[in-house]
Image (cartoon, rainbow, N blue to C red):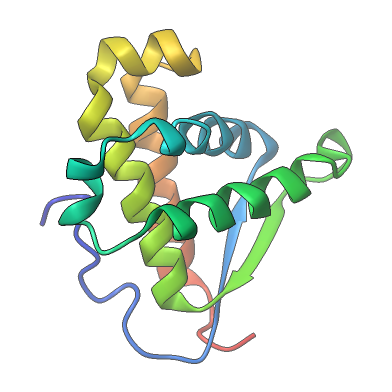
Length: 131
C-alpha cells in the first residue's frame, strides 16, 4: 500500500487522537506551512480544499504557542477522517515539492519527513477510536 493511501486506518469511529513528539510536530508544522503554496492542480484530486488546509495550519499554529519543550507529546483530537485528510495534505506537499525542495523549504531531509508521516499513521492506527 502506498503510504499516502488511508487503508483502514481512518475508517469508522467517532473520533481519534494523534500524538506527536515536539520534534515530529516541528516536521509537520514546516510541511503544513507549504500548504498555501500548493498549486490548484495538486488539490483537485486529493479531496481537500484550501479552506481545509487553512484550518489545519491554524490548528497547528494554535498548538505551536504551547510550551512544547515541557511536554513529551502534543495531542490532536479529531475525527479519523480529518486525521486522514491532514495526512493526505502533508503527503501532497511531499509529492509536489520532492526531496530537494522539501529540504530547502523545511530544513528536514526526506528520511526524517517519511519517518514522521509513517509514525503519524501508526499513532492514529494505534489510538482508540473514541475521544
